[in-house]
Amino acid sequence: MAIFGCQACFALPYVSEGFQWITENDLEVIRRHFTRRPESLDFWWGSKVELYAYSPNERITVMDMKSDMLILYAANNQNAFEGIQKILKTVGEPY
Image (cartoon, rainbow, N blue to C red; front, side):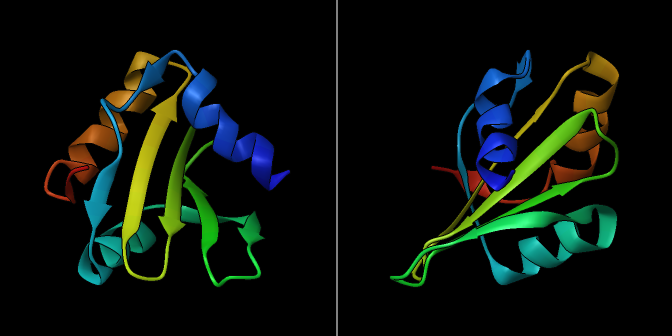
């Protein structure tokens, strides 16, 4: 299920302009405002992918690559996408 959630960030009609680098503080903002999905991916080399959302209409993919963290987010409608953007407007830097 986690791979489908991650792929949703590429397939949904409203997608962030690209990946963004985030810090631990940025991740805390995401954790405060969105619910972590139960599915995740853990790789043997230590990287992991976590998914967050506040409804079934969107996905925020957090990729923890050990030395860097990246996010990509998407939604299936404009209202959900704009809701994510309002919260994440101060989070991260373009990749």
